[in-house]
Amino acid sequence: MAINYFKGDGTMDTVVAVKIIADKNKMNQLAKIAGSTVIKNGNCGFDGSLHFFKNNQVIQDISFRLNDAACMQFSFKLDGKLYFTELTSDAKNLIQSFKK
Image 1 (spheres, rainbow, N blue to C red):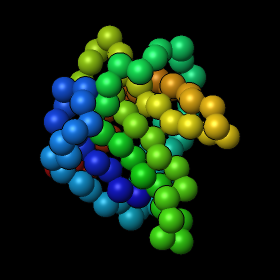
Image 2: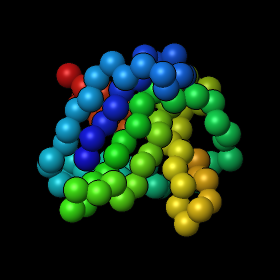
Image 3: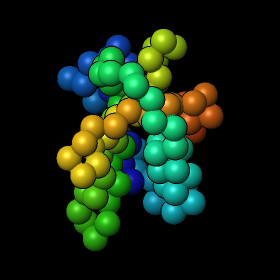
């Protein structure tokens, strides 16, 4: 899994860090959190993205917003449909811990 961290202001024009996560337990933990609670929020910007790989191909892209308390969410497409899910404080802490 690769995590792209953007500026943190909701725009995706500047990647400031990229972290590669190879630990399957951490990847599964993050994937489970990202797909947990569907919410009705809309697009409110991005602070980064998760890219899950299998056999050197991206199998799922997930964007996240964690620097806006009013709109903390994951967003991703699945079977052509756009979903928004809750980004909890635990998820925020996990994503931020990878950046260190």
